[in-house]
Image (cartoon, rainbow, N blue to C red; front, side, top):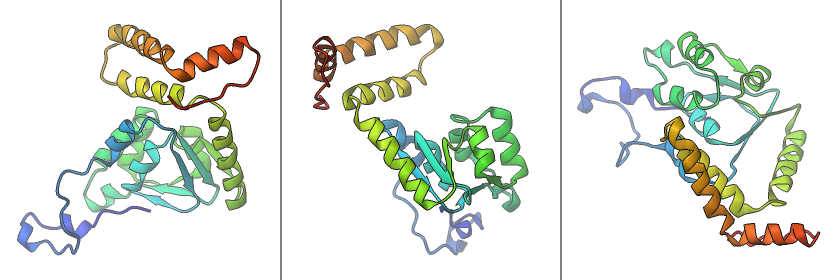
Length: 201
């Protein structure tokens, strides 16, 4: 769970703010950190997720949640609006659904979150949670870490390019990927009808 300290927003006069949390040295960029990771990231959820906690959830490629999980955006009930969370949600959910959620501040339960694209895997309990995550990790680890890293880097790079630029950019990223040791090994292993040995290079 993640909450902002609302006391820090309670006054326009900084000297009157009652927050006991010191201000950060620079503007928080939690939502941006995942764009620089270029590795599959998995959220393991079995409890409520509030407000800014959704920045972490949206940054993950896989979101595995139990049926007991729910998501809450209460900002408008406090006279605020979840600005940064809205931006992150727009990457994984339809715009009208996101805006409705931000405006009405209703609770979103895990089964609905699965239908909306916020959750990728829904399980009944913690035991199934761990089994599902182990399965995802096992599938990922069978494949080239270099190819995955390059693919996620290409995906993030698309966000700053127009549709006209996208194909040229992806063609260049493919050429870069073809020059990696993992790509050379993968093609050779296919030709030799054996399992590849990945080095992550």
